[in-house]
Amino acid sequence: MVNPPNSLDHRLEQLGGSLRVSPQPSSPSQPQPSQRDDMSGIHIVVPLSWEMTYKRHNASMFGLRKGNATTTWIQADTIAGMRNEGIRRTRGEGAKKVLFIDADMTFDIDALERLLSHDVPIVGGLCRQRREPFSATLWRREGKGHFMVPPEGHGLQEYDATGGAFLLVDMSVFDGIDKQVNVEGRYFVDQRDNVALPKEERCSEDIYFCNLVRHCGFPLYVDLSCKIGHLVIGEVIDGDDHEPQFRLEKGAQ
Image (cartoon, rainbow, N blue to C red; front, side, top):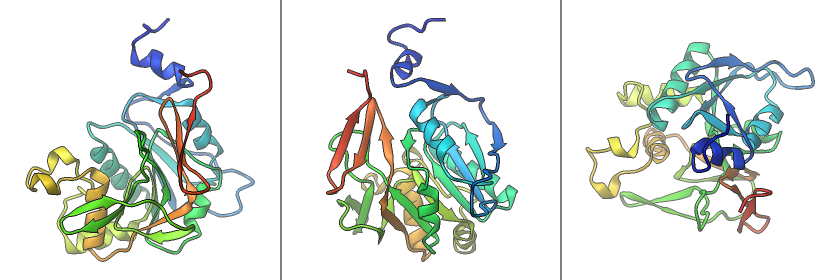
């Protein structure tokens, strides 16, 4: 069947194809014989904001060195709901860490290993927003709000907040939150649900989570050397000099 020229399916096909996924599949990835380290304690959660994923994202997922870690793709009404469901399923599996990977991200085969090399409770890769000026998803807190900051230096750096696009979290963080705050399993809350807060204090679901973990005493880090691509009609990624680089998908206009 040929998709109409202006349909979402047609546009995604132009971006490199797609993989259709059932609403709530849960299937473990197969162990890789060449994987040196046991990753059975890691659960990878991929929130799906639509029913298809980019071909280049799929290639990154298939190539990622993840050993015998399990992977779950989740669909729900909101991105916060998908992340919270991912935490619930990770607990159900008895995993020690959860890795959130958004379905429009690309990454190197050793990206997970890089994050695991740091003995910290929360660490993310360096991502950029998909719209100009392609700012890095790094925030410092000032007063009751946050302001974005450019990446400086290399390696592991501490921040007040980052995005959830490629984020590794130790499950002890959620246990620690539960001991201090009664969130009833809602560790991520969408901006539209932050109605109890003044408008200037409302934030996205990942900033909300970062505020929560910082409030509970957990430091938050980003590995600036672990660069994650953000797919649009191309890819925006951090350059060698920390200037955003936009790569147009071959054949796209």
